[in-house]
Length: 200
Image (cartoon, rainbow, N blue to C red):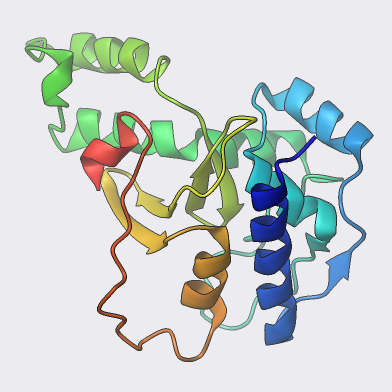
């Protein structure tokens, strides 16, 4: 059962995306489909993300010239399992890449081990404990977790993490609205998810 506030937020996000006319929608995911995805990939959708996907499932369109992502919307219903696992694992893999290649080390992890292999192994152990992030679109993520909603959407590229929306509905405006360059002086997102918020 999804909280009423989360349900409204997810439905509003779907409405905003539909208004852009950029994507078609399949029928939303059913409870059985949510259960299968969550069991197969080992996380639970946040309530607003769940409500968004239950309202309608955005369909990927053929990429336009210069588009980076061929399938930016995760294909939860019938996508390739390895592709979905890669999309889910991308935030952690990006951090590991920066540990190995760019000397990244989170201060909460204590002293960095001297050897590259030891540092990578230690980082992998630490990252196994951080909250799971779930792809929304391309490299935009929301935290997993039933009973949660209203988190900012994060754009994640390795350890370069920025806000892309106050919440899921605001994200649809920020990502897909032509007026996204407009500056709103009151726009002040606050990341709430342990570890990931430290990198924003």
